[in-house]
Length: 489
Image 1 (tube, one colour):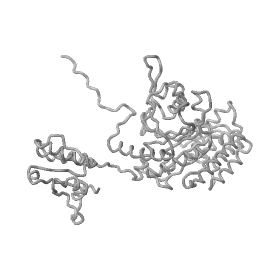
Image 2 (cartoon, rainbow, N blue to C red):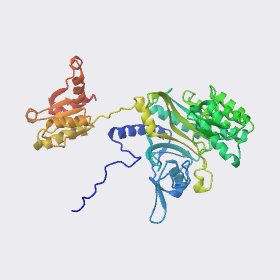
Image 3 (cartoon, rainbow, N blue to C red):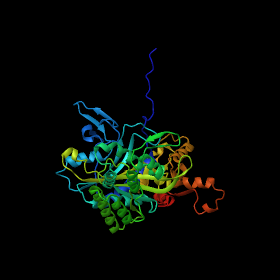
Image 4 (cartoon, rainbow, N blue to C red):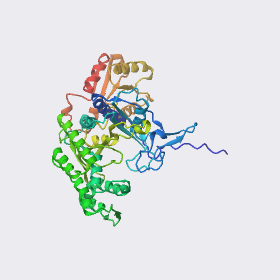
């Protein structure tokens, strides 16, 4: 007896997920609002291929030894290595180089779409996710950085994060380089120590000043007894670095003044402070005060990638974590200036600055705030009482659609009417349209308010619903107007 053919398993590949109706609708709605802000600022949309050559993508994923490690790559028939893009910035660098004679300079663009990373998946960590970027290529002016920060603040408010629930923090890689110089950590031979210092500063929120100071010195033993080797800095060196981590003051002016003291003897450090001061002045002139955007030396995440100003959008409201503990929502966007990226293609420095919004995180934040509808209204369902009169039902659904109302005819087996209403319920339909033989003869239709009907079913009293019954019979000619009224349009 021959073996039965093996059926494929119906399951999503590891590290990937499927998105259904409401999730897709909510994401699109949010991205449309962000795009409207970017558009208002003069940015143009750009869509690049999901596939790039491995050579063009280069090595920009952190902690990766080979160009095609961390990406989904394969060899084409003509021996070229191709890969799925791992972010939206590397393709922009290729576009800026490829079309440099045709594009305006500076070139402002925004891009939204999926990216892929061949990493170990974990809870909430997927191999395919959405990014939403905006970048300016070709301007070295800090006005370009200030504009990105202002635009990010506007975008957050536009999607429903109120002022006071977010802050855009701005720092500068050059200031940190200056601090390292003053602390005696400049030069190639100090790269390992600089790496430990960067990672230590990045943990200040979690470990506090004492924990960071321990990592700057000999090292730190955590609660479990595990020991992390430190950077081995002297007391004086550690003092300079700690001064940097605590440099934030009540105003941008005071923070800048403190940073200037710290990097007094460093040319690159002073240049970074000047840039921060310039950004603060430009934002202040447009009315973006410290309630929205602040100078904050604590922003060091991803500093290895950036060459100047860096920014991070943090949501400051509290949510409950999976263990029921209160915690701040945290970062939803990050970016900065990366002047070396296009140079890989052209050999010439091309200044660039930009921001990337974590789409899934921002969407989760909006849901936590109750700022997006968790449920998207389904279509009006025209039920089928008599399969021989399908043309009549199709005419009804056609009129509703022409009037801009989302509607569909029930296309399953019409024998059991209860199943049709169950279907409408599963579709989260607000209204069911019913016309049997009696109603057809009388020239009427019955409209069943499914949302109100559900409310009545769970309500103890009908008094509040007296003015609006859950089911009405109306003349066939009034179908559209009556459905509109029921939908509250």
